[in-house]
Length: 464
Image (tube, rainbow, N blue to C red; front, side, top):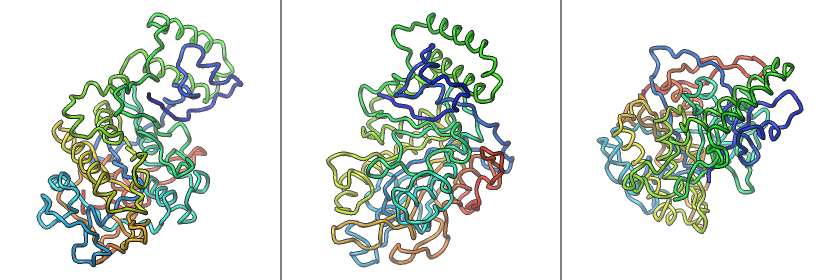
């Protein structure tokens, strides 16, 4: 079962989307396919001196992966800080990583590690907003924050969608396999286009590629609508559009008409169906990623960038009947969680993704960002867990013009605060778009036509 969620432009007339799409298109869970393929702004021309990456995959470990067990272990710290796990050498001379990531350790020659990332925010929603937009939430430390002004800056994916039109018949930015939410289904702010306008929202696709019955029903025409009838319905819609002169004169209708055309193209061409057809992948390769929902979403992300999608964000999903709901928010049983399922799943999927991209000659043109909204506290709590920590944490980047085998920045002896090489989310955003060929001061315009810069951060020159 595939669910695609996005918000397209509203029509200026009083006809409902249901009435429109009853004429020859497809209803998708209350939304309609033309809403998912709204028009995009023209792309800015990247300067020749900037990066030349074609795509970005955001490998999102939402919930807060621990710096202590991954990229910034502290073997000389007391047990209550370092934890029970040791370190192992990596492929990068002098770089030791947590012992629970042996597969990733063999790939560090392709990876740049950032050890002093800071949001100074200890709430999932507001720290996550800063990581996704590069702008601090106002105020900081607000849990279950809602996406509204003044916290409505555009997400990474929506900026990509603004700058780059879709390639072929797919959008330029896709989020899988679900949106990011707090308990109570409170979506984090910073996941949509905000002040850029809803037509630039990334496609949000709710799906489970690990399901043997996974298919893209939403993009398949119903069995009772063969190609000839689909063509006839398109002709009927063209006739109706021709007679709606008043609606046609408005920009909103033009966007709607363009989206409708793209909807028919998606259904009739099969381009999207091919990109989402996981059965085309060998079973051994699927096993290499792992058969979890998140791991198979990583494989799907590779398929999407192959099909021309510029940005795919993969969000870690919760797993029922596991401690901490199977997520990285390890307030209890931290050591058991990271050892039994979190780190093995992460290590396997991340290493498979990087290796797969490299084997296909795609890594040089695909930036992979190992990503979380913050880290974990230096000390364990009374429940054997680590709590939220935005004062310093680690990220990693690979491919897409990033220098491998580099460690930038460091934390203090307890992985509690930056020692040097401090990085803020705005710098991460600037670096991502530098790799894609855009300067941090590239001009965007909001829905009112007011200019603002792509980022107010600095490119992390040590890793590009």
